[in-house]
Length: 119
Image (cartoon, rainbow, N blue to C red; front, side, top):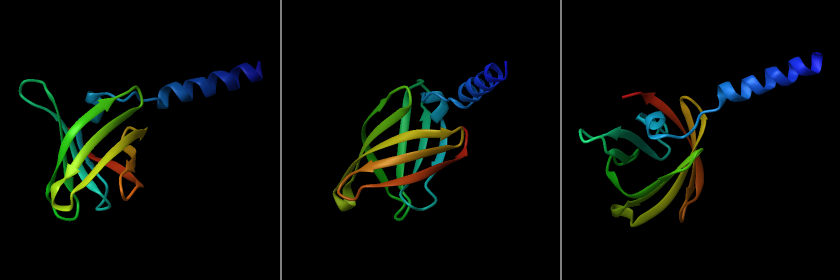
């Protein structure tokens, strides 16, 4: 009986903490606290999904070339013209207000993003 209780508690905690990646989940402003970019996920008036990525250091926007959402990640391909810098970033959910970004580029790295606010 004790084992059944432990298994049930573990299963419930896994399901309650699980968050699937979706456009609705992403909606809002996310910050890297100056380490990389600031990201705004939103919807246009025509209900189209929009991604704005802005350099934390210069305040200049990156060109978002493409994105792909899977069950647990979003991949964003972006280009920053002033530095001729192209990257693919894989954002993975940690919890409702935290994502980890794995950046694949000439300067790879991992950055933590926090939700600033929901829009």
